[in-house]
Image (cartoon, rainbow, N blue to C red; front, top):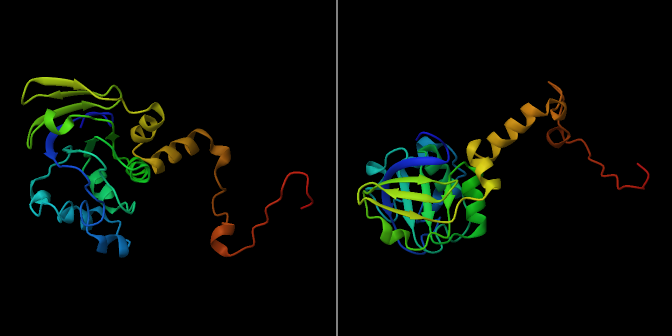
Length: 200
């Protein structure tokens, strides 16, 4: 992967209605609140393709049809995919799943009609998420899908929501908490919300 918004890798093609639970990742990892990529990666897409984890390589793509990531928006599968620097092209994806993927730094293009016909398993694909341009180097074909919105590009370019926040705090040091300052949210101190025009 040369840039967070430009990626080249092999394709893994799936159909419609791939659920997050028992599709992308076993439900037990969500229940167990497992977030360690090293524990999650060996079980990626295990319920659909038990050989997936042994074949996937960093930078590969998941190509899917409609409703990719449907069901409860558990993020364990996205954590594993982001750790592998994967990318996703799909026809559609539920909003909450899309939000979870982007927040973890997983680049996703939706609205990719015909993507599952444009590539086959194992094809060498190059995708420019900022423009939507996709180049199938194996078949010598190109296609342009809807580009990733600018607001999402910024999050992906920073490696996810945490990276974007870290960059913002770096540029706005006055907004950081003082070193060693206790957090009212952590020490149990009462938090008073004062509405404008009311007494404290």
